[in-house]
Amino acid sequence: MRFCSIPAVLAVSMTCAMLPASLGAQGARWKAHDPARPKPSIVTPGTAAGAPPSDAIVLFDGTDLRHWSGPGGAPPKWTLRDGYMETAPGGGPLITRRGLGDMQLHLEWATPSPPRGKGQDRGNSGVIIMGKYEVQVLDSHGSDTYADGQAGALYGQHPPLVNASLPAGTWQSYDIIFRRPRFDAAGKLVTPARATVLHNGVVVQDGATFWGGTSWLQFAPYEAHADSLPLVLQDHAHPVRYRNIWARPLPDLPTDEAGLAESRPALRMSAEALDALTGSYGRQGSPVATITRRDDRLLLALRGFNRELELVPETATRFAFRHTVGTAEFAPGADRAMSLTLDVAEQHFTLVRLQR
Image 1 (cartoon, helix red, strand yellow):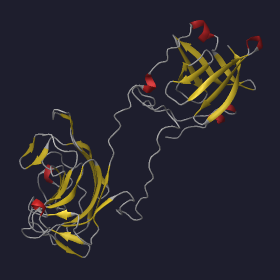
Image 2 (cartoon, rainbow, N blue to C red):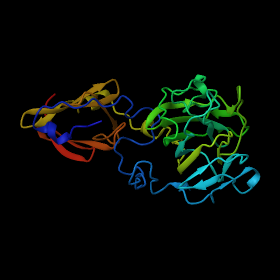
Image 3 (cartoon, rainbow, N blue to C red):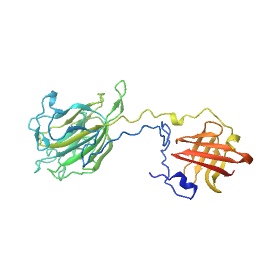
Image 4 (cartoon, one colour):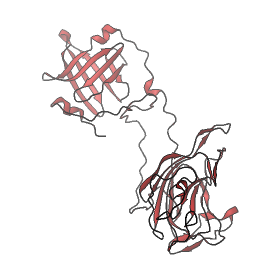
């Protein structure tokens, strides 16, 4: 969303995009535009579509299978050739040697060409996250099967929003944002696993929730498990190919943002003291800001903005903003004159009261 520059309202009337309703929502730890808020780390994107970014864990780059094992830690039996790996008869699943939990996962896959079989017996494999939560791999181009078994389905639970499949033998991509389930100390489910899936760049799952672990004909009820478990590529006795597999572990979503922005200071001002600060403020006779009182709250409205900002008293003349970093400081002068200095959103300027 684009925001207007505050100094611009000092000279000309303007229109600004409406501030989002969620700005400064209750429970936010950080006020808007707080310069002390930790900055995001810098990541260099891949230079080509599907290329791993600088912080990715590369699980398969086409050269070897050192990051994978077969069942029980046995050496992998899949075939490696020409930059891809392919299921082998009796090879069993391929399992990462490291565990993964919350992550962004990218991989590319291709089903056999020419296509063989129909329905579920047609280029079948699967990406089984944490060994429990499957995103189906299947040749679904021009082939009919049940909806929650198509390519891009959370198998047996959620069909893809659309069928974005390409013809058999064509390299296709999955980009998966996965959030693991959370359990409390007693092992009770707090939040279920969920996934957003892009199939060939098309959203086919949008934050869909897993009802439980993947199981044929039904789903398996949740049981508490580790935060990090291996990723599994399914062997369904079809020669499905995979290449360019990488993952970016994701940090926990913030859970410690309660209360700070909403805590009210102990200072209380009388209605008379608040009324003494109300009025319109501006420069050269042109009003820019209006201060009003509503019950025990002092509210600031800037011309061109259609949302009031609440002022919270720190002293009798200095106020902080309720949800935005900055201050508003009043300076009484002679003959009931009053100036208002605003420091907000990296802007700093002083206005004088034009009228009460």
